[in-house]
Image 1 (tube, rainbow over the protein chains, first blue to last red):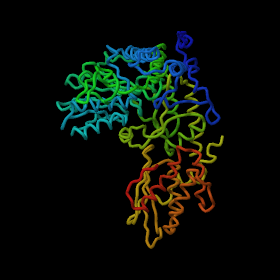
Image 2: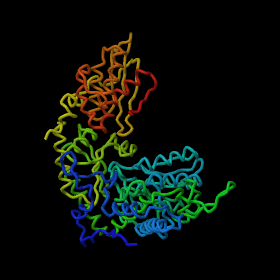
Image 3: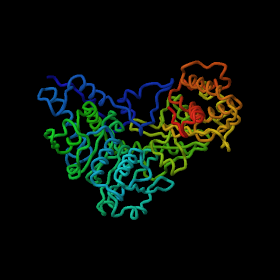
Image 4: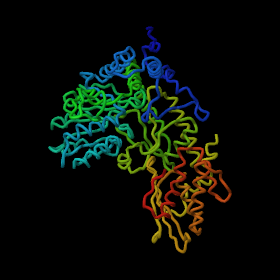
Length: 418
Length: 147
């Protein structure tokens, strides 16, 4: 069999967003007559050639079910599937690839932990501690668990810049606390939470911590061992991979004690009508045929990111956020929502007299894609006394000229309303 | 560049800036709340209906220019209208904003909302107040979620 060459041409030593941008075919299009400026990366990122080609090659050549067949195609598909798991282990710096469960996305990962670990360990009167800036995906699964178990949800409050009030942590963590679940980076505000401090405080009381890393994984260099979180969850599509696939990282000793999530094929050792015995992690939690092409694409996304100078990427994104913040601050009547000193490349704002939906429509008509609304974080919006914001969020392929286009488009939109 | 061409016509902007008949109506005979779960927009409609006639109508809530203007224009259009005519109007407006039928002159000033049919993500903004109106008239429930 001849191997297809999947690798992209080697990247230059120095990170150059202009060169990277050319690897993303979707960015080359015009929208409503203007070259596309894509600033909705916190919702989902565009996909590089490398991911598209890896999935295309898999679908053209290697389609078979995994962990089952003995034929050549199944071996190839299984090898690619498990190679993605190993690449992800390296990417997260996890001890073992057995600590990585492939799921549909961050939402499913949280639901999985709530339905297994949660049901096993959380009872009447117990407490689950969340933060005030959580995405609905890190609120609702815990509410469902609380309703079933009689547990109580507690919330770490935040200040008007969008920083958690850590001084409240001592009182909130108590002997009834069974789990802390919070975002690494807020999707609506951009705040990077001080995980080390929170995890240390929780662990000193024997409380495990789940981190929703959906907004962090494309930007932060991760080391789950050093972070010492108990669970870390994220979606592939926010890190330049495909949608419909994501990762639950869990410490092996925790995963081993957790009951199955869904029952079905591939998660069992043996089945009879009397009883079944279950596989070890991660397979215990991967019932049914998984999203094989998605996992292959996610592996390619990991290779793509790992092939870059991540420190240079982080510097570029921080500079971009800085430039965008200064540019937007100069617009009269514009207020930035979320002004924590440590932020990911997310810029939420409101404008006097212009509703975010109208603004997003007028920006779209000038080829600028942003998000408007409550960003699935209604409690966060409530903290700031607003129903919605407009959000520009950046990826590694964005440049200062994208920011300039945003600012110019904002000016044109304001003319309509003022 | 003309950004305001078909969606943000001057009449819509005017109603968005200065909504008519905004506030609560007490006492009222009919009331419902419309909610767009996608964006969080909310419109409450209060009606005073006696002898099959809309004697008075007001709305309150928060939303974008399209939903505010639509609610504001709705109140102007249906005040003094017999309930059966309101129901006919409702169906016509829904057909217009979803693009199922073209704007016709019987809709009066409401034809400025027709442009929204070309923006699928914004159709609900225009129809929110009308959904709330339908719910208030049907007396089926207090909150309606825009479909």
